[in-house]
Image (cartoon, rainbow, N blue to C red; front, top):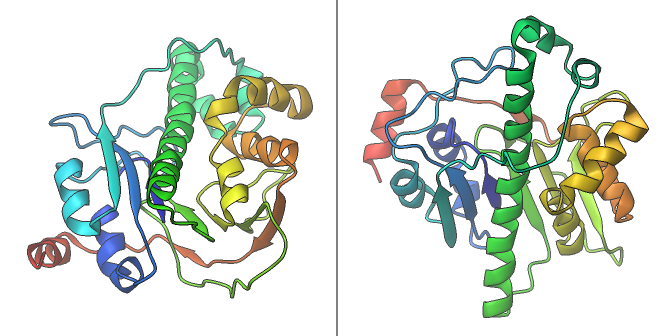
Length: 256
């Protein structure tokens, strides 16, 4: 299990689904971010403005999830990336961003930083697992990737297959070939490709712009899996955004 990105709702997700995380055959690997004394994420996406990360994520995530390996680091700037976005390229897939038209250069930097942070975190998390797998001779057959704030309520039966290089993705009926990036499960090779967007971001950036006349994470993932000939299977995992109230969170946390 690869858990990556900001730790919003991490405590809720664990306690609502702890039987899964404590499963005998589940190894948890975590990569997340931390800024001392800052809880607010200042998210600009509609409906996400009040997002918060958990307090002291390095200590809390280790205590709650008991991961095999964990990295919690300060956010990176990624300002050295030679990636340029125009207003049209963003609005083609993020029409809500028009509300920031008066500060678009600043918003562009914000969007790219968020995108690169997400793919960096996913990549680092996979590398934690990969390193552990090689050092301990553990051939993981299935790899699951998820955010801290969503959880699948339905896991379709995944059977033994001779097929290599595959992933199962949440079916969101997204337009223009986009592939949802909230949750995925696949074999080792398929998920290695899925988690390699950051390593190939420059090439993917221009592929997306050339092919789709826009930029978004969902198109980057589509192009990544296409280039690596990864078989994409769509299904409904019934992803949920369940959240405990504050009192329940604290009571559950104190149990651990």
